[in-house]
Amino acid sequence: MFSPALSVCLLALTHCALAGKVCPRPPEVQFATVDVSKSVYEVGEQIEYTCRPGFVPNSGQRRYTCLPTGRWPLNTLLCLPQRCPSPGPLQHGKIDFTDSYYQSSISFSCEPGYNLVGTRTSQCMADGKWSGSLPQCQPVTCAPPSLSEFGVLSYRRLKPGNVSTFLDTITFECLPPLALIGNETATCMANGNWSGIPECRSVTCPTPTGIENGFINFAVRRIYHYNESVSYGCQPSYVLDGPKESRCEKTGNWSIKPTCKGPCKIPVKKAVVLYNGEKKRVQNDLKEGIQHGETISFYCKNKEKSCAYTVAAQCVDGNLTLPSCFKERGFFSSLVKKDPSDMTPCED
Ligand SMILES: *[C@@H]1O[C@H](CO)[C@@H](O)[C@H](O)[C@H]1NC(C)=O
Ligand SMILES: *[C@@H]1O[C@H](CO)[C@@H](O)[C@H](O)[C@H]1NC(C)=O
Ligand SMILES: *[C@@H]1O[C@H](CO)[C@@H](O)[C@H](O)[C@H]1NC(C)=O
Ligand SMILES: *[C@@H]1O[C@H](CO)[C@@H](O)[C@H](O)[C@H]1NC(C)=O
Ligand SMILES: *[C@@H]1O[C@H](CO)[C@@H](O)[C@H](O)[C@H]1NC(C)=O
Ligand SMILES: *[C@@H]1O[C@H](CO)[C@@H](O)[C@H](O)[C@H]1NC(C)=O
Image: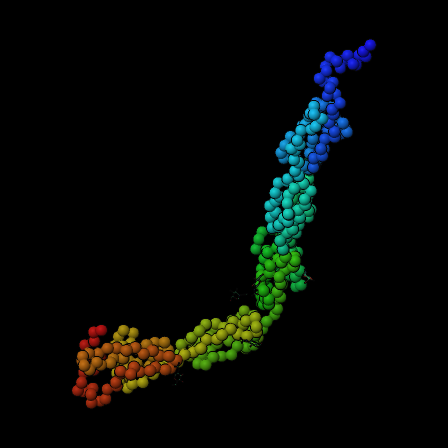
């Protein structure tokens, strides 16, 4: 008698000859798991690998079938870590990272003057996204400066709004007659402090002193305050040189005063000269001399060519130097010879 099982075997002899063949446990693949985990697999049985969380199939096949030879086909699957997109950018800050694969972490930092708001680090997660959200670098704020003498020292922001942030500047002002001592502007620094706060101080200058050959207009003998000024004038025929006004400065000194420059006598008895484009006789028209800064031109003779030319001389604070070519004429020569001012002008 044949058992029913043997009858089946006889009907499919070839198949039964291989019945002893089975596949062993499939090979381990790095960063992957297999859907069914058994120690023995039937011929024709199919398995499927899955990359572990955070890993993605890069190349090769995921499905394999147990071959009639009792072997698995060559495994080609390669699972590689998930990659997160490159993070950022972080305005006013920087992101430090070595790579952007699954489980790597990045760290955020801000430039001086900026505070990090949010998390300092982030990890590349299994889903290919960075954990948390991108932090922000917000500028440091400076509190309004505390004014010791309120109402005396005031300030204004150069930017609209009532909050000052890193690198903003403010400008201080003092009420007259107080003088601002220190820097007029302050900058909000990275540490949240103002770069410097000036002071308003009372500054006085002593009674101003006069100048030589001049006077102070409407002078009153009193103490003067910061930024008060006095004006100067000169005696007749003297010329004011420099600023007309002197101002009481922050140092308690007067700013530079003008000087009075003197007129020049013309150091010849008789001559015809050119003054303001006109011929003038020194002995008649220029007895008083000329003022500081003015020029007159003297006539000089070119003997060879029998012609005359002019050389200018300027009055500098009472000094006037005659041109070396100029010859003052004696009584005799003025009778017999033509004056150079009447000779034909030399051609250059
Ligand atoms: C800033 O100004 C706004 C309106 O201009 C006001 O609501 C806010 O309270 C002010 N903040 C401070 C700190 O003064
Ligand atoms: C005043 O401070 C500003 C910064 O707030 C600086 O740039 C400037 O040089 C300072 N001026 C003086 C005279 O110190
Ligand atoms: C800011 O200024 C205050 C007062 O002048 C000072 O005590 C503090 O140390 C300063 N802060 C920094 C960070 O320099
Ligand atoms: C100083 O006084 C003059 C007027 O004499 C004025 O124009 C100027 O703004 C004043 N300066 C200051 C710093 O107060
Ligand atoms: C200003 O006055 C001070 C004393 O108050 C003096 O030491 C200084 O030399 C003076 N400066 C100038 C420029 O005259
Ligand atoms: C004017 O002349 C005098 C005396 O010769 C001399 O001491 C002075 O320095 C001169 N002044 C100018 C401005 O040349």
